[in-house]
Image (cartoon, rainbow, N blue to C red; front, top):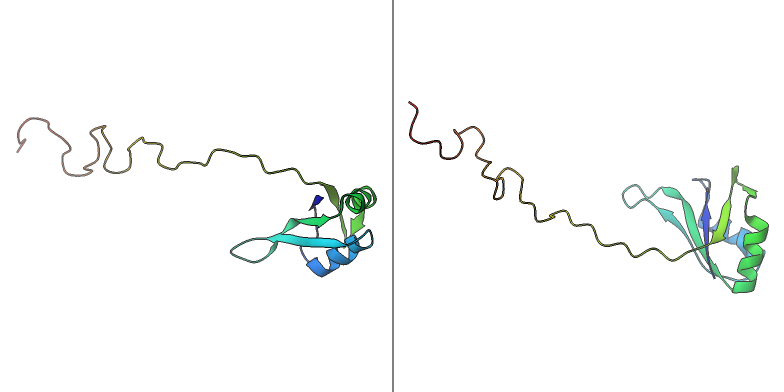
Length: 117
């Protein structure tokens, strides 16, 4: 069973959380999610353990105070499959203006018919 744990104190180490969950059975894996750039905890993580032990841990640890914060412990739900976001959107745009005719900032712009000076 995969368990989602949120509202984890940012100073909590994985070993501390593992010790907490091992009171209910064998922990197959545990991960506190961290920011890629700073390496700091994001305050949530995942614990994987057997179904019976996992249910018992959820029941006992949900809304329990741990390291100064009240944990939220629930069964993890699969991540929803969302369509990947496109940053292009086939709209053209940018400084070249796509097929809209714009672009050319500061040089008189497009065809206006002849030179004015």
